[in-house]
Length: 324
Ligand code: GLU
Image (cartoon, rainbow, N blue to C red):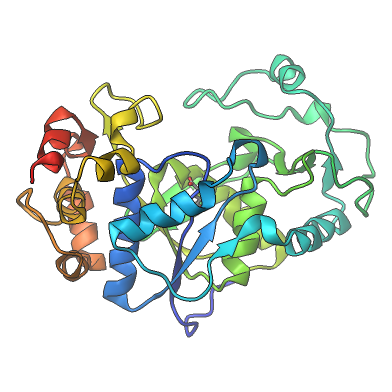
């Protein structure tokens, strides 16, 4: 379904409150928010807390405090995915009615050993079609606490990204049949995002480019469900100076730790704008100045000329943030 061009523009900040936000997440959220405020889009804050085992007590409040301390604001109530599972259940039922959904009780190691070869680029295991149960598959959900997969045949899926241009993926070859529901009784990430972006009226998704391949899967799911999908804006990720994605092991880079060391939000904003190439100098920047600098054209220009070193966060950057 095509996005209605007259629909008011809206984006979302969608943290997973499963651990401390780090400086890389902070950069993505700052740029997402600044682009939205530059363009006059509505901003929804959505806590993606369905990964039940990983969400600790107090994590919601910490995620909200981290974003607020960065200086970000949002419009309307905070959306919390776990509060109401009915919208996701309704969409799983719709998928079952299509006859394309099956219950899958196979363990990960069973799937791995049956899979012919992991997808070369990221080692992702493709669900092998020969593990599908015999058809026809039930058109009603018989057990909510069970993994469910959706049949995905190999086929190109073109993703148009506002910053990166057109990219082509093949979810059927890369991942195979998609997990859309888990045995914890909750939707899997891909389904939850598609349902929420549609019901929250999200027209523009801005996030890290680690989720670019997911955009293809989300488009495909949205099409099957008769839902619109948003425009995509994928931003380059920040890496540690060991070349790895920022993660818990880069403990000192957690936003909480930085605030506790007295780091000012203007320094984080200045580093974010400089590291992506929006401003030429690494200098403290007010959030108003960040908003003024973050136009779609400026972002496109920054990303097309960016050199890869600008996305590494190293000791030099940490030292600079900690200056007063
Ligand atoms: N909650 C996801 C994350 O923290 C982001 C999901 C999305 O933007 O689609 O990585």
